[in-house]
Picture 1: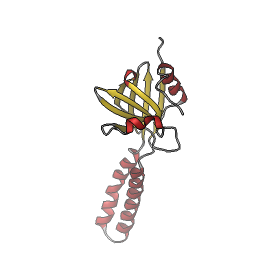
Picture 2: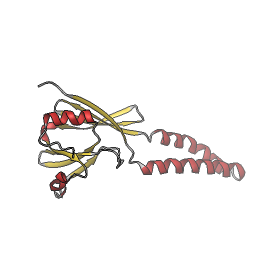
Picture 3: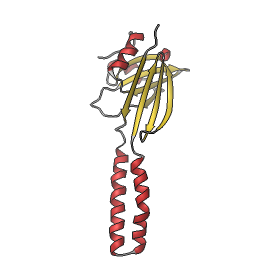
Picture 4: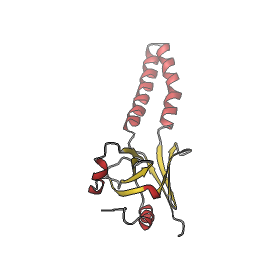
Length: 167
């Protein structure tokens, strides 16, 4: 059998707290600078010290996931700031039990299992097509949520047609 290959990069949109933190830091820095310029040198110094902290915090907010499907191996990596790449997990496609859209009824039997571990590597946007991949390795069930492209779905479906559902 020939090797299959698919690569997907998905921007993480779940970080709502990060957006609120970014806005809060900017506002706090501006307020400290403004009040410090008017009233106290100590407050102004705090505002100046907040500038590099705010810049670093804003810069480190960008996060995306990368899925790399090569033959029978799915590698999931985390990419921070478009430069720091860290491999999170690797899954063997031989351990794939089921792949279906997140809201599919085909996953109901797995969701009733209290020991199911859910790992979300999707963007978190409900408008996107998010799929659940159920893996059973070493007696542990894991639900891995991903956002595959059509090419990746076709590759997985070609090798595991009986357990991949696109309904």
